[in-house]
Length: 451
Image (cartoon, rainbow, N blue to C red; front, top):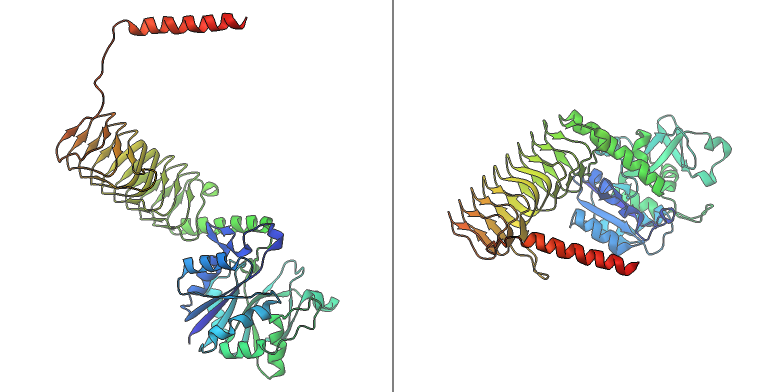
Protein backbone atom coordinates (compact mmCIF):
# COMPACT_ATOMS: atom_id res chain seq x y z
CA UNK A 1 0.00 0.00 0.00
CA UNK A 2 1.42 3.38 -1.00
CA UNK A 3 1.66 6.26 1.45
CA UNK A 4 1.89 10.05 1.18
CA UNK A 5 3.28 12.46 3.75
CA UNK A 6 1.90 15.84 4.75
CA UNK A 7 4.36 17.89 6.83
CA UNK A 8 2.85 20.91 8.59
CA UNK A 9 5.48 23.65 8.68
CA UNK A 10 3.59 26.93 8.46
CA UNK A 11 3.95 28.26 12.00
CA UNK A 12 5.93 31.38 12.81
CA UNK A 13 7.12 30.15 16.18
CA UNK A 14 6.56 33.42 18.00
CA UNK A 15 7.99 32.07 21.25
CA UNK A 16 11.33 31.40 19.53
CA UNK A 17 11.71 35.20 19.21
CA UNK A 18 13.41 34.77 15.85
CA UNK A 19 13.20 35.93 12.24
CA UNK A 20 13.93 32.34 11.21
CA UNK A 21 10.88 30.09 10.71
CA UNK A 22 10.60 27.72 13.66
CA UNK A 23 10.99 24.55 11.59
CA UNK A 24 14.36 25.77 10.27
CA UNK A 25 16.05 26.08 13.64
CA UNK A 26 18.89 23.54 13.76
CA UNK A 27 18.91 20.30 15.71
CA UNK A 28 21.88 18.04 15.18
CA UNK A 29 23.17 20.43 12.50
CA UNK A 30 19.99 19.98 10.45
CA UNK A 31 16.73 21.95 10.38
CA UNK A 32 13.95 20.57 12.56
CA UNK A 33 12.01 20.04 9.33
CA UNK A 34 14.62 17.57 8.07
CA UNK A 35 14.15 15.35 11.11
CA UNK A 36 10.45 14.94 10.36
CA UNK A 37 11.21 14.34 6.70
CA UNK A 38 13.87 11.77 7.58
CA UNK A 39 11.45 9.73 9.69
CA UNK A 40 8.74 9.87 7.04
CA UNK A 41 11.08 9.08 4.17
CA UNK A 42 11.76 5.64 5.67
CA UNK A 43 8.23 4.68 4.56
CA UNK A 44 9.22 5.24 0.92
CA UNK A 45 6.34 7.69 0.32
CA UNK A 46 4.90 8.27 -3.13
CA UNK A 47 4.51 11.99 -2.45
CA UNK A 48 5.67 14.43 0.21
CA UNK A 49 3.84 17.72 0.64
CA UNK A 50 5.18 20.41 2.97
CA UNK A 51 2.65 23.04 4.05
CA UNK A 52 4.53 26.31 4.48
CA UNK A 53 3.42 29.69 5.77
CA UNK A 54 5.74 32.04 7.64
CA UNK A 55 9.02 32.28 5.73
CA UNK A 56 7.60 30.06 3.00
CA UNK A 57 10.46 30.70 0.57
CA UNK A 58 13.04 29.65 3.15
CA UNK A 59 11.03 26.60 4.15
CA UNK A 60 10.63 25.58 0.51
CA UNK A 61 14.38 25.90 -0.09
CA UNK A 62 15.14 23.75 2.95
CA UNK A 63 12.59 21.13 1.95
CA UNK A 64 13.95 20.89 -1.58
CA UNK A 65 17.50 20.66 -0.21
CA UNK A 66 16.41 17.49 1.56
CA UNK A 67 14.63 16.07 -1.49
CA UNK A 68 14.16 17.93 -4.76
CA UNK A 69 10.92 16.04 -5.40
CA UNK A 70 9.12 17.46 -2.36
CA UNK A 71 6.08 19.59 -3.16
CA UNK A 72 5.44 22.75 -1.16
CA UNK A 73 2.08 24.47 -0.75
CA UNK A 74 1.37 27.81 0.91
CA UNK A 75 -1.01 28.25 3.82
CA UNK A 76 -1.46 32.00 3.46
CA UNK A 77 -3.54 32.30 6.65
CA UNK A 78 -2.85 30.10 9.66
CA UNK A 79 -6.39 29.03 10.54
CA UNK A 80 -5.56 25.79 12.34
CA UNK A 81 -4.13 22.36 11.63
CA UNK A 82 -7.25 21.20 9.77
CA UNK A 83 -7.02 24.20 7.47
CA UNK A 84 -3.31 23.45 6.93
CA UNK A 85 -4.01 19.86 5.86
CA UNK A 86 -6.73 21.08 3.50
CA UNK A 87 -4.10 23.08 1.58
CA UNK A 88 -2.44 19.80 0.58
CA UNK A 89 -5.65 18.31 -0.81
CA UNK A 90 -5.27 19.56 -4.42
CA UNK A 91 -1.76 18.09 -4.66
CA UNK A 92 -2.89 14.72 -3.31
CA UNK A 93 -6.28 14.54 -5.04
CA UNK A 94 -5.21 11.44 -6.97
CA UNK A 95 -3.13 9.89 -4.21
CA UNK A 96 -3.79 6.21 -3.59
CA UNK A 97 -3.28 4.57 -0.22
CA UNK A 98 -2.74 6.28 3.10
CA UNK A 99 -1.61 9.71 4.15
CA UNK A 100 0.28 10.55 7.34
CA UNK A 101 0.26 14.03 8.84
CA UNK A 102 3.52 14.98 10.57
CA UNK A 103 4.80 18.21 12.11
CA UNK A 104 7.94 20.07 11.15
CA UNK A 105 8.62 21.04 14.76
CA UNK A 106 8.28 17.51 16.20
CA UNK A 107 11.62 15.90 15.35
CA UNK A 108 11.75 12.66 17.35
CA UNK A 109 8.92 10.52 15.96
CA UNK A 110 10.56 7.23 14.97
CA UNK A 111 10.17 5.49 11.64
CA UNK A 112 9.14 2.32 13.50
CA UNK A 113 6.28 4.19 15.15
CA UNK A 114 5.01 5.44 11.81
CA UNK A 115 5.11 1.90 10.45
CA UNK A 116 3.06 0.74 13.45
CA UNK A 117 0.46 3.37 12.60
CA UNK A 118 0.28 2.11 9.02
CA UNK A 119 -0.14 -1.44 10.31
CA UNK A 120 -2.98 -0.28 12.59
CA UNK A 121 -4.83 1.04 9.55
CA UNK A 122 -5.86 -2.56 8.85
CA UNK A 123 -8.17 -2.25 11.89
CA UNK A 124 -9.19 1.42 11.86
CA UNK A 125 -10.12 4.01 9.25
CA UNK A 126 -8.23 6.70 11.17
CA UNK A 127 -5.26 6.16 13.50
CA UNK A 128 -3.93 8.74 15.95
CA UNK A 129 -0.54 8.69 17.66
CA UNK A 130 -0.97 9.15 21.39
CA UNK A 131 1.22 9.06 24.49
CA UNK A 132 0.84 8.84 28.25
CA UNK A 133 1.99 12.22 29.53
CA UNK A 134 3.84 12.63 32.81
CA UNK A 135 2.41 16.14 32.93
CA UNK A 136 -0.53 16.44 30.48
CA UNK A 137 -0.52 20.22 30.69
CA UNK A 138 -2.27 21.79 27.72
CA UNK A 139 -2.16 18.78 25.40
CA UNK A 140 -5.33 17.62 23.70
CA UNK A 141 -6.86 14.58 25.45
CA UNK A 142 -7.77 11.30 23.76
CA UNK A 143 -11.22 10.12 24.77
CA UNK A 144 -11.49 6.34 24.30
CA UNK A 145 -13.94 3.50 24.80
CA UNK A 146 -11.92 0.34 25.16
CA UNK A 147 -9.52 0.20 22.20
CA UNK A 148 -11.62 2.64 20.15
CA UNK A 149 -10.93 6.36 19.98
CA UNK A 150 -14.15 8.35 20.28
CA UNK A 151 -12.86 11.91 19.98
CA UNK A 152 -10.06 14.32 20.80
CA UNK A 153 -10.72 17.29 23.06
CA UNK A 154 -8.43 20.31 22.99
CA UNK A 155 -7.38 21.55 26.41
CA UNK A 156 -9.19 24.88 25.97
CA UNK A 157 -12.45 23.07 25.34
CA UNK A 158 -12.03 20.22 27.86
CA UNK A 159 -13.97 19.75 31.08
CA UNK A 160 -12.18 19.22 34.37
CA UNK A 161 -12.91 15.51 34.11
CA UNK A 162 -11.45 15.35 30.61
CA UNK A 163 -8.38 17.33 31.68
CA UNK A 164 -7.67 14.63 34.26
CA UNK A 165 -7.02 12.14 31.42
CA UNK A 166 -3.30 11.49 30.82
CA UNK A 167 -3.59 9.87 27.37
CA UNK A 168 -2.69 12.78 25.11
CA UNK A 169 -2.64 13.62 21.41
CA UNK A 170 0.63 14.01 19.51
CA UNK A 171 -1.14 15.45 16.47
CA UNK A 172 0.21 12.75 14.14
CA UNK A 173 -2.65 11.15 12.19
CA UNK A 174 -2.86 8.40 9.60
CA UNK A 175 -5.83 7.69 7.34
CA UNK A 176 -6.60 6.69 3.80
CA UNK A 177 -5.90 9.85 1.79
CA UNK A 178 -9.37 10.30 0.32
CA UNK A 179 -10.96 9.66 3.74
CA UNK A 180 -8.66 12.21 5.37
CA UNK A 181 -9.55 14.98 2.93
CA UNK A 182 -13.25 14.13 2.94
CA UNK A 183 -13.30 14.52 6.73
CA UNK A 184 -11.16 17.67 6.67
CA UNK A 185 -13.58 19.28 4.21
CA UNK A 186 -16.35 18.97 6.82
CA UNK A 187 -14.47 20.67 9.66
CA UNK A 188 -15.93 23.71 11.39
CA UNK A 189 -14.32 26.30 13.62
CA UNK A 190 -16.88 26.53 16.41
CA UNK A 191 -14.39 26.36 19.27
CA UNK A 192 -12.63 28.63 21.75
CA UNK A 193 -9.84 29.51 19.28
CA UNK A 194 -12.01 29.83 16.18
CA UNK A 195 -9.69 27.44 14.33
CA UNK A 196 -10.20 24.37 12.16
CA UNK A 197 -8.85 21.59 14.34
CA UNK A 198 -7.52 18.50 12.55
CA UNK A 199 -8.35 16.59 15.73
CA UNK A 200 -12.08 17.11 15.11
CA UNK A 201 -11.97 14.59 12.26
CA UNK A 202 -12.12 11.80 14.86
CA UNK A 203 -15.62 12.82 16.00
CA UNK A 204 -16.65 13.27 12.36
CA UNK A 205 -15.33 9.82 11.47
CA UNK A 206 -17.13 8.19 14.39
CA UNK A 207 -20.36 9.96 13.44
CA UNK A 208 -20.09 8.38 9.99
CA UNK A 209 -19.55 4.94 11.48
CA UNK A 210 -15.83 4.84 10.79
CA UNK A 211 -13.49 3.26 13.32
CA UNK A 212 -10.72 5.27 14.95
CA UNK A 213 -7.82 3.87 16.95
CA UNK A 214 -4.75 4.90 18.88
CA UNK A 215 -1.10 3.85 18.62
CA UNK A 216 0.79 4.74 21.79
CA UNK A 217 4.45 5.76 21.71
CA UNK A 218 6.95 6.96 24.29
CA UNK A 219 6.36 10.58 25.30
CA UNK A 220 9.92 11.48 24.25
CA UNK A 221 8.99 10.87 20.60
CA UNK A 222 6.30 13.53 20.70
CA UNK A 223 8.47 16.36 21.98
CA UNK A 224 7.55 19.54 20.12
CA UNK A 225 9.83 22.56 19.91
CA UNK A 226 8.27 25.93 20.75
CA UNK A 227 11.02 27.81 22.61
CA UNK A 228 14.78 28.05 22.56
CA UNK A 229 14.89 26.34 25.94
CA UNK A 230 12.96 23.40 24.47
CA UNK A 231 15.32 23.39 21.47
CA UNK A 232 18.28 23.21 23.84
CA UNK A 233 16.75 20.28 25.72
CA UNK A 234 15.98 18.59 22.41
CA UNK A 235 19.60 18.99 21.32
CA UNK A 236 20.77 17.37 24.55
CA UNK A 237 18.35 14.48 24.03
CA UNK A 238 19.41 14.09 20.40
CA UNK A 239 23.11 14.03 21.28
CA UNK A 240 22.55 11.51 24.08
CA UNK A 241 20.75 9.21 21.65
CA UNK A 242 23.41 9.55 18.95
CA UNK A 243 26.24 8.90 21.41
CA UNK A 244 24.53 5.78 22.72
CA UNK A 245 23.91 4.50 19.20
CA UNK A 246 27.53 5.14 18.18
CA UNK A 247 28.93 3.20 21.12
CA UNK A 248 26.43 0.39 20.61
CA UNK A 249 27.64 0.20 16.99
CA UNK A 250 31.25 -0.30 18.07
CA UNK A 251 32.59 3.26 18.11
CA UNK A 252 34.85 4.31 20.99
CA UNK A 253 34.05 7.75 22.41
CA UNK A 254 36.80 8.91 24.76
CA UNK A 255 34.51 11.50 26.33
CA UNK A 256 30.93 11.05 25.08
CA UNK A 257 29.67 14.24 26.73
CA UNK A 258 31.95 16.38 24.54
CA UNK A 259 31.30 14.61 21.23
CA UNK A 260 28.66 16.29 19.08
CA UNK A 261 26.97 14.55 16.16
CA UNK A 262 24.92 15.72 13.19
CA UNK A 263 21.71 14.04 12.11
CA UNK A 264 23.45 12.23 9.23
CA UNK A 265 26.81 11.34 10.82
CA UNK A 266 27.97 7.83 9.82
CA UNK A 267 30.87 6.17 11.67
CA UNK A 268 32.16 2.64 11.18
CA UNK A 269 32.97 0.34 14.08
CA UNK A 270 36.39 0.30 15.77
CA UNK A 271 36.78 3.99 15.06
CA UNK A 272 38.03 6.05 18.00
CA UNK A 273 36.74 9.57 18.63
CA UNK A 274 38.69 11.78 21.02
CA UNK A 275 37.30 14.47 23.33
CA UNK A 276 35.74 17.67 22.03
CA UNK A 277 35.07 16.51 18.47
CA UNK A 278 32.26 18.18 16.52
CA UNK A 279 30.62 16.63 13.47
CA UNK A 280 28.81 18.93 11.07
CA UNK A 281 26.56 17.64 8.27
CA UNK A 282 27.55 14.96 5.74
CA UNK A 283 30.42 13.21 7.51
CA UNK A 284 31.22 9.55 6.81
CA UNK A 285 34.03 7.74 8.61
CA UNK A 286 35.00 4.19 7.73
CA UNK A 287 35.94 1.53 10.26
CA UNK A 288 39.23 1.73 12.12
CA UNK A 289 39.90 5.46 11.75
CA UNK A 290 40.93 7.76 14.58
CA UNK A 291 39.69 11.31 15.16
CA UNK A 292 41.76 12.95 17.87
CA UNK A 293 40.75 15.72 20.25
CA UNK A 294 39.38 19.13 19.26
CA UNK A 295 38.57 18.43 15.61
CA UNK A 296 35.74 19.90 13.54
CA UNK A 297 34.53 17.86 10.56
CA UNK A 298 31.94 18.72 7.93
CA UNK A 299 31.07 17.35 4.49
CA UNK A 300 34.00 14.94 4.41
CA UNK A 301 34.84 11.26 3.96
CA UNK A 302 37.55 9.52 5.99
CA UNK A 303 38.74 6.06 5.04
CA UNK A 304 39.92 3.08 7.07
CA UNK A 305 43.08 3.58 9.08
CA UNK A 306 43.24 7.35 8.67
CA UNK A 307 44.12 9.59 11.61
CA UNK A 308 42.92 13.16 12.00
CA UNK A 309 43.99 15.74 14.54
CA UNK A 310 44.25 16.87 17.19
CA UNK A 311 43.02 20.36 16.35
CA UNK A 312 42.23 19.66 12.67
CA UNK A 313 39.44 20.98 10.50
CA UNK A 314 37.99 19.07 7.56
CA UNK A 315 35.64 21.10 5.38
CA UNK A 316 33.23 20.06 2.62
CA UNK A 317 34.83 18.07 -0.16
CA UNK A 318 37.69 16.69 1.95
CA UNK A 319 38.34 13.07 0.92
CA UNK A 320 40.91 11.10 2.90
CA UNK A 321 41.97 7.69 1.56
CA UNK A 322 43.27 4.81 3.69
CA UNK A 323 46.12 5.47 6.13
CA UNK A 324 46.17 9.22 5.52
CA UNK A 325 47.44 11.30 8.42
CA UNK A 326 46.17 14.84 8.98
CA UNK A 327 47.76 16.42 12.03
CA UNK A 328 47.34 19.40 14.30
CA UNK A 329 46.21 22.77 12.97
CA UNK A 330 45.64 21.44 9.45
CA UNK A 331 42.67 22.50 7.34
CA UNK A 332 41.50 20.51 4.31
CA UNK A 333 38.82 21.82 1.93
CA UNK A 334 37.60 20.31 -1.36
CA UNK A 335 40.74 18.21 -1.61
CA UNK A 336 41.43 14.53 -2.23
CA UNK A 337 44.31 12.93 -0.35
CA UNK A 338 45.34 9.54 -1.72
CA UNK A 339 46.54 6.57 0.32
CA UNK A 340 49.32 7.18 2.81
CA UNK A 341 49.52 10.98 2.44
CA UNK A 342 50.95 12.76 5.50
CA UNK A 343 50.01 16.35 6.34
CA UNK A 344 51.51 16.74 9.78
CA UNK A 345 50.84 20.26 10.94
CA UNK A 346 50.10 23.91 10.26
CA UNK A 347 48.89 23.48 6.69
CA UNK A 348 46.01 24.50 4.42
CA UNK A 349 45.10 22.35 1.41
CA UNK A 350 42.16 23.66 -0.62
CA UNK A 351 40.96 22.69 -4.11
CA UNK A 352 43.71 20.12 -4.49
CA UNK A 353 44.58 16.50 -5.24
CA UNK A 354 47.54 14.91 -3.45
CA UNK A 355 48.96 11.65 -4.77
CA UNK A 356 49.72 8.59 -2.67
CA UNK A 357 52.49 8.59 -0.05
CA UNK A 358 53.24 12.27 -0.52
CA UNK A 359 54.55 14.23 2.47
CA UNK A 360 53.33 17.79 2.99
CA UNK A 361 55.70 19.85 5.15
CA UNK A 362 54.61 22.16 7.94
CA UNK A 363 53.27 25.55 6.92
CA UNK A 364 52.36 24.55 3.37
CA UNK A 365 49.52 26.48 1.72
CA UNK A 366 47.73 25.97 -1.57
CA UNK A 367 47.05 29.55 -2.66
CA UNK A 368 43.80 28.64 -4.40
CA UNK A 369 41.89 31.96 -4.47
CA UNK A 370 42.78 34.96 -6.59
CA UNK A 371 40.08 37.22 -5.16
CA UNK A 372 37.48 36.15 -7.73
CA UNK A 373 38.01 32.49 -8.67
CA UNK A 374 39.26 29.25 -7.13
CA UNK A 375 42.09 27.31 -8.79
CA UNK A 376 43.30 23.73 -8.52
CA UNK A 377 46.61 22.35 -7.25
CA UNK A 378 47.74 18.91 -8.44
CA UNK A 379 50.45 17.14 -6.45
CA UNK A 380 51.64 13.79 -7.72
CA UNK A 381 52.52 10.63 -5.80
CA UNK A 382 55.61 10.32 -3.57
CA UNK A 383 56.24 14.06 -3.61
CA UNK A 384 58.06 15.83 -0.78
CA UNK A 385 56.73 19.34 -0.20
CA UNK A 386 59.19 21.29 1.94
CA UNK A 387 58.03 23.27 4.95
CA UNK A 388 56.54 26.70 4.36
CA UNK A 389 55.92 26.10 0.65
CA UNK A 390 53.38 28.34 -1.05
CA UNK A 391 51.76 26.57 -4.05
CA UNK A 392 50.19 29.32 -6.18
CA UNK A 393 47.37 27.64 -8.10
CA UNK A 394 46.80 26.60 -10.77
CA UNK A 395 49.98 24.58 -10.47
CA UNK A 396 51.13 20.95 -10.79
CA UNK A 397 53.93 19.20 -8.95
CA UNK A 398 54.92 16.00 -10.74
CA UNK A 399 55.54 12.57 -9.24
CA UNK A 400 58.62 12.06 -7.04
CA UNK A 401 59.40 15.78 -7.10
CA UNK A 402 60.50 18.01 -4.21
CA UNK A 403 60.12 21.64 -3.25
CA UNK A 404 62.65 23.47 -1.12
CA UNK A 405 61.52 24.88 2.20
CA UNK A 406 60.23 28.43 1.99
CA UNK A 407 59.58 28.25 -1.76
CA UNK A 408 56.81 30.09 -3.59
CA UNK A 409 55.89 27.76 -6.45
CA UNK A 410 54.25 29.64 -9.33
CA UNK A 411 55.08 27.29 -12.23
CA UNK A 412 54.64 23.55 -12.76
CA UNK A 413 57.34 21.31 -11.30
CA UNK A 414 58.32 18.37 -13.55
CA UNK A 415 58.43 14.81 -12.22
CA UNK A 416 61.53 14.01 -10.16
CA UNK A 417 62.65 17.66 -10.13
CA UNK A 418 63.63 19.81 -7.16
CA UNK A 419 62.03 23.25 -7.22
CA UNK A 420 63.56 26.07 -5.17
CA UNK A 421 61.94 29.50 -5.42
CA UNK A 422 63.29 31.90 -2.84
CA UNK A 423 65.74 34.82 -2.67
CA UNK A 424 69.43 34.03 -2.20
CA UNK A 425 70.57 34.43 1.39
CA UNK A 426 73.17 37.13 2.14
CA UNK A 427 75.09 37.45 5.42
CA UNK A 428 76.28 40.93 6.55
CA UNK A 429 79.05 40.52 9.16
CA UNK A 430 78.50 42.60 12.31
CA UNK A 431 75.40 44.32 10.97
CA UNK A 432 73.05 42.73 13.50
CA UNK A 433 74.92 44.30 16.46
CA UNK A 434 75.15 47.71 14.80
CA UNK A 435 71.43 47.68 13.98
CA UNK A 436 70.47 46.70 17.51
CA UNK A 437 72.63 49.49 18.96
CA UNK A 438 70.89 51.96 16.63
CA UNK A 439 67.42 50.66 17.61
CA UNK A 440 68.25 50.93 21.32
CA UNK A 441 69.48 54.52 20.88
CA UNK A 442 66.29 55.47 19.04
CA UNK A 443 64.26 53.96 21.89
CA UNK A 444 66.26 55.80 24.55
CA UNK A 445 65.97 59.15 22.72
CA UNK A 446 62.20 58.62 22.41
CA UNK A 447 61.87 57.98 26.16
CA UNK A 448 63.90 61.11 26.99
CA UNK A 449 61.58 63.17 24.82
CA UNK A 450 58.60 62.02 26.88
CA UNK A 451 60.14 63.20 30.18
